[in-house]
Length: 186
Image 1 (cartoon, helix red, strand yellow):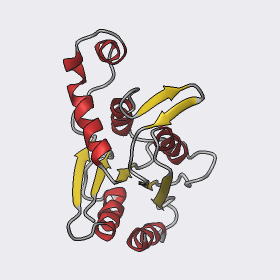
Image 2: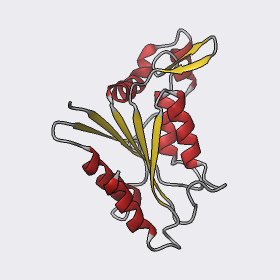
Image 3: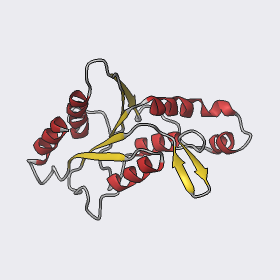
Image 4: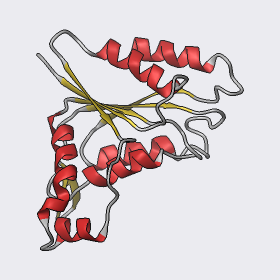
């Protein structure tokens, strides 16, 4: 069965990007013949949430303000699998990925409120967080990246979140190779 894999890049695009290398290997491993891979760069002008956006999303504001958000949500809802390329920037996710998250987490589209709490509406069953850091160890007290993304993805209904990491690669020179091997074995 053909699937759609949505890959969201959020780190700076440069030739030495460890997260992009890891994601390239992971997506190559995940994609089967017939699968469609959609690439979205969160670093290319995603709008921030503004007062007009909030009015349009939650009140009677101009709905045209939500056009970009709707496009991003449609991509997300069409995906069978997600690959979030999320390097650690100052202990957390890049601002570009936060902008993407803010655009796609929207009541009535990717989650709804019910009597017992929110219910996720995203049908992708699995997501990959591809991350790298110079010194922050994934899972340590200073890792605000992966717990945040696990919470966000769980909130919108993605039950299976897996992490591929090359953490601490500034001090552990084998970290990148181990990350690449993990991506290839996923």
